[in-house]
Length: 149
Image 1 (spheres, rainbow, N blue to C red):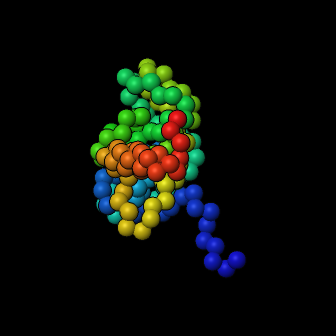
Image 2: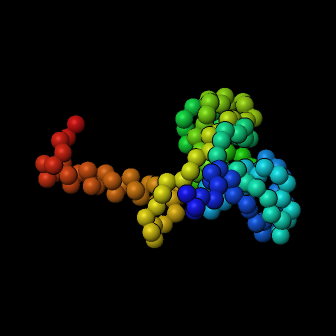
């Protein structure tokens, strides 16, 4: 195969902001990666890994169940199970994290593929999608296409 480039579990990242330390979460488009090396401010370049399980900081006021979707705050370098504006989906809890635990193991995940022109996912978009989905289900039930449970 002549068009293979690399496995795809990492990317070369061009930094346009503050310095990034090795191990920091980095927003890469609509997903999170982990800096494998220190990346200098403004014009620095470095490798960011997009796959794997990492121990990431979390709030000590929130318990996290295994398999729960987590969201990254790249400014505070923490993860939470509570979606909010400005947070980036980063993966799922690879283990349960007690409320008092300072870290949780997170399995980074690829973000869902979007149709061309589809807006980015956010907490607001998700809520709207649930409303639309429930309305669609109601119409299908009313038409007799699916049964009411």
